[in-house]
Amino acid sequence: MESQTLPKAELRLTVARLLELSYRKDEGITTRLVQEVGNVRLAVDENGKAQLSGKAGSVEFSASKLASELGVSIRRVKVLMSVTDSGDIRYNGSFNLGYASVSITGTIDIDEFLRSCSGLLCYAVRLLEGQKRERDRQLQKALGN
Amino acid sequence: MKGYAAPLLLAFICSACATAEPLPAKARYVAFEKALTGSEDASPFGRYLSNRIMAIHEKAETDEELASLRNQGAFPLWLKEETTFHERRTDNGRCLTVSGTTFDGEPGYMAVRFITEDGALRADDIHYNYPETADDFPSKAICPDEITLSFPGSDDT
Image 1 (cartoon, each protein chain N blue to C red):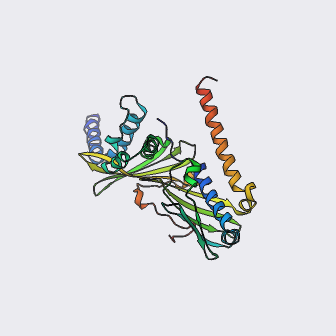
Image 2: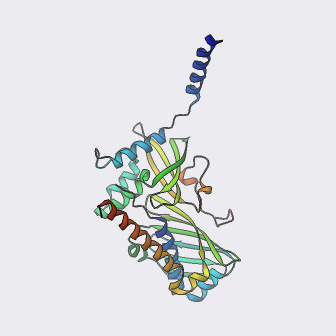
Image 3: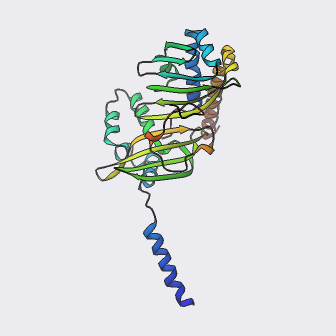
C-alpha cells in the first residue's frame, strides 16, 4: 500500500481553482481583493458553498464540483491570505478530508494569476502533469521498461 | 582505579535506564507502518485507529469511499523519509509529531493524537502539514488540534 493522500501540487491547484471560480463569478471584486494589500479569507463549507472576502468586498460562489473534478475528497477548506505590497499572496490553507486534515503554506504571484490561464492555474496544472509523468516513469522503471 | 570503573559504569547505565522516556506512540507508528507494508494482515486499521475513526470507515458506502478513508488513516506511509520525531504524554494517551520528506518529495510533518482504547494506543486525530521549508518543522511534540490557522505574518485567525 502506498500513501495516496493529497499531494502538495493538488492542494496548490485547489487554491488556484477556487480563486479562478471566484474570478469567474465576479471579476471586479476578486481582482480588487487579490490586489489590495491586506488580509483575504477564502472558505468552502461541506455543501460546496464558497466565499472569498476581505476589505474590498465579498464574492460567493459554488465549489461543489471542484472536488469531483479533482478526483479528491475534500470536505471543508479554509485559506487565510495576505496580499503583500510586492504583489504576492501568501497563504495558509487547511483542508478537511473527513476525519484527517492537511494544511499547506504557499505563495501566489498575483500578476501571473490574473493573466488568465497563462497564470498560476496553468502553472499548477503543469506541475501536476509533471508529477504524473514522473510517477508513470517510475512505474515503467518498476515494470522493467 | 580499574576496580571502580565497572560499578561506576553500571551506575551510569542504570541511571540512564531509569530516566529514559519510553516512546510508545512512536512504537505504534512503526508497528502500523510494518502492518501496512507487510503481507500478513490485509486490513490492520482496526488495531491502530480509534473506534471513532473505524465507525467512520464502516459507514463508507462504496469501495472508493472506503479507500479514500483508509488513505487518510494510513499516516505512517505519508513520509518516505523521517528526519525527526517528538512525542509527549496527554490526558488519555500520547501526541506524536514526525517530520521528514513526504511521499511526493516535499518537506512535511504530521501530528497524530493517540488515545488509549482497550489497553492499546490508537490514533484518533491526524493532521498532515506541508510547511514551505524544513526550517518550519516543529521542535517539540504537538497535537493535531494545536495546529491553528493564521494569516501569514500575524497571529490573527
